Amino acid sequence: MEPMAMRLKGAETKLACFAPGKTRGGRGVEHPAAGYKKIFETVEELNEPIPAEIKGVIPSWLGGSLLRMGPGLFEVGDEPFHHLFDGQAMIHKFDLKDGQVTYYRKFVKTDAYVRAMTENRIVITEFGTAAYPDPCKNIFSRFFTYFRGIEVTDNCMVNIYPVGEDFYAVTETNFITKVDPDSLETLKRVDLCKYLSVNGLTAHPHIEADGTVYNIGNCFGKNLSLAYNIVKIPPAQKDGSDPLEKSQVVVQLPSSERLKPSYVHSFGMTDNHFVFVEQPVKINLLKFLSAWSVRGATYMDCFESNESMGTWFHLATKDPAEYLSSHKFRTSAFNIFHHINAYEDEGFIVVDLCTWKGHDFVYDYLYLANIKQEWEEVKKAAMRAPQPEVRRYVLPLDIHKEEQGKNLVSLPYTTATAVLNSDGTIWLEPEVLFSGPRQAFEFPQINYSLCSGKKYSFAYGLGLNHFIPDRIVKLNVQTKETLMWQEEDCYPSEPLFVPTPGATEEDDGVLLSIVVKPGAERPGFLLVLDAVKLTELARAEVNIIIPVTLHGLYKP
Ligand SMILES: CCCCCCCCCCCCCCCC(=O)OC/C=C(C)/C=C/C=C(C)/C=C/C1=C(C)CCCC1(C)C
Ligand SMILES: [Fe+2]
View 1 (cartoon, helix red, strand yellow):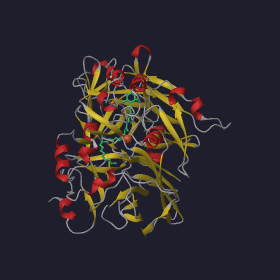
View 2 (view 1 turned 90 degrees about the vertical axis):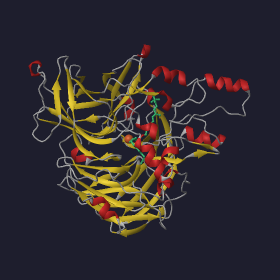
View 3 (view 1 turned 60 degrees about the horizontal axis):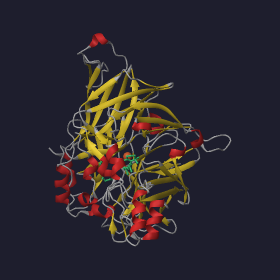
View 4 (view 1 turned 90 degrees about the horizontal axis):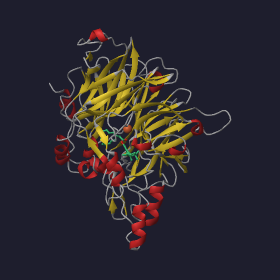
């Protein structure tokens, strides 16, 4: 019997539980009304927070702000942005206090946004949309605009995270933007290149309990020597100075290919190790450097797939921070954006990942023209894309030459393998934790404060159905059981886990997600789920649409 299909007829809110191996068999729900188009449309910022209408009961201990980033402006004048990651950064906030909720949003006043507003055209080239020179300028000044080089975008629409006492909205370039988490005002733009030898940093740092930030970024050194640099930003300083002043590169990891670093979106961190997965999606630096002088080129034009390297895993120790050059882990090709968690267990490093099979770049399928089509077309486009799979890889730390050809993984609870080859490389095969054709478990979250870098049981994620976000899923990474929240014509976002104060169980807490239900009287709401059962505790509704958000944080 197909439990999902059964439950989706009739009742409005759907909850389903699937036993291991009996996941939805890949058949997701249908979206013939194509309501998802609404989350990719321009909205206006608000002048003041608006009150939300609450249904259900918000736990009394839940007081704080949910801050999330995403695109809010999908065209400037008559010039459209083409890619999902091009829209201009909007910061969203749900404030929860004494059972009451308000919603507020502002555009971040980045250079990209301010200059677009001033000139009523796209001025800064975005991820998949090129900016063209001002047609009003004369031919000479247009010529000089080209040769000043293209300006790197500061469109911080991906995530927001704390550095010391401050909060920064970020993309993946060297520009991060300090924002006020209360007023949502834009405070200042910071160029990371002033502090660190990196060309950019990911939007997914790891943050320790004391506020220390670790992150990874590409570094194009002198003579185009390439490395991935892991950086450390200390916590708030006693003397009140900016922690960024004391940031440093702690370890360099080499690139598999000269002139072609891999695209990196996140990394893993255990108690004692950094894990970097080098994927076959490459940035062709020569294209990158020359593309900028080519009219109409974008960041997307600089990517290419390496069809032969597969995927490489790199390890480094944390303290002292040293690259483990003799541990050469290899596996077949996949795209990786989000690490779920990584931990050490009995001499192994366990790495759980949201993967997309093959070397074809998933971002190629995220043009707005693809994901804003009618439902049948959306499905057709996704048929050609890489297939999602949640996988567990297990990396042995102790490797002995005499063990060639044998599976080195002796952890009793996993079928993942690691086999030492005669050339010294170790071939990894994963254990599949969740799989369903074109049904992704993505935008993963865990009980970060309790479980980051530690053995854990639960991951929470956004279910993507042919790339359309249409459910929230809880995955037991030990038993592979899943629970799900889903409601007709509802489009949720990444679920953030907030632990109950004083909780002793890993999943004692709530999940917060912004949901859009386009046809409803109040089409935007903050959803509060019980993280144990994935049942709805409350929703706080507003009478406006909230566009797609990618990542964010909960500030107690
Ligand atoms: C929430 C629902 C979304 C609906 C569809 C989503 C489908 C998602 C499928 C896969 C998961 C992908 C997750 C990616 C999430 C994300 O947040 O990505 C945003 C990434 C951005 C905006 C990256 C920008 C990177 C830039 C501008 C990099 C620039 C650079 C280079 C390309 C090379 C040289 C260095 C430099 C300048 C840093
Ligand atoms: Fe991400």
